[in-house]
Image 1: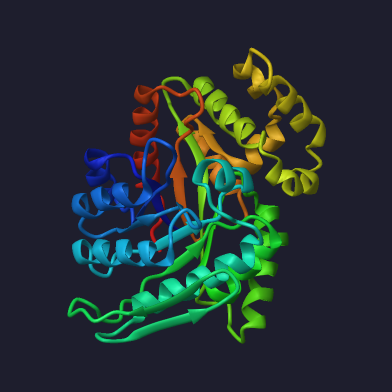
Image 2 (image 1 turned 120 degrees about the vertical axis):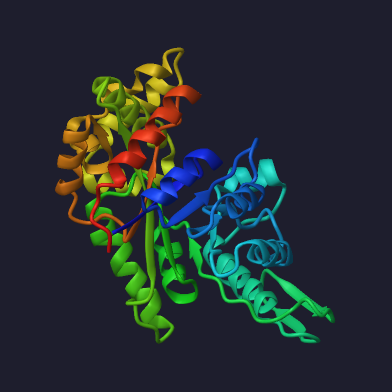
Length: 333
């Protein structure tokens, strides 16, 4: 298993790279942009792969995604990947002001057009007339030349996972993915998508976030922060199929009811040990090792992601440092 981190900042990234981190990713929200952060990553690292993980796919045109990747690749040649996520229907409609209906086929077309821009040679005309994207670009510039970068999809539901298997280079899994979800949903649907395109699965990337909170000085605090992060994620109804697979409906119903109250900090109380051990790596170093060994199916490249819900910057920095020390002891592939 290779390991990496969501971007911890330049100083800790240097330490992480020296400790064996092979990839850094950057998410985005209303106060941080995945491509801007990826530029910082490209300048601050020397060996690891860097890229959005994820960038909101439909908030940008294929041209904007491709031009950002090209510029990143000038700074970090051969080290750039692109992770795309659809976002929720509400985010696309109310935050971004874009149409995101039929996200799986829309994502497939988006990736095809992005690749057309990335593969364009000097003087190529890029023509695409699909259902969701229509492009007729006569680009004549000396800077262009074919650029191949891995494109991964942040996929959860079956249709999007199949799309990743059919048109992308792999999947970027969510932090709540369990062994059963990888085994019973992700891998079979990736294979179905790949088979439909006449592809194999051996070369597909299976990357994913793993909620990680390790603190030998205060392991109970670390466990609680991991529980809080799991509960916070499970307030989103998109993940109900995973909840149903594991039989966690009662706990999640309680989490959602309390989350709407004036005490959202108490949602951690409804994350059972089964939920915790199925999703996170946390506690002191010894328990974290035990939890890691108990996972049958971690992603091929694991991003050890610190909790962020109700976690101070100081604690997050401490979790990053402890996570780097923990990961540095792992056997490298």
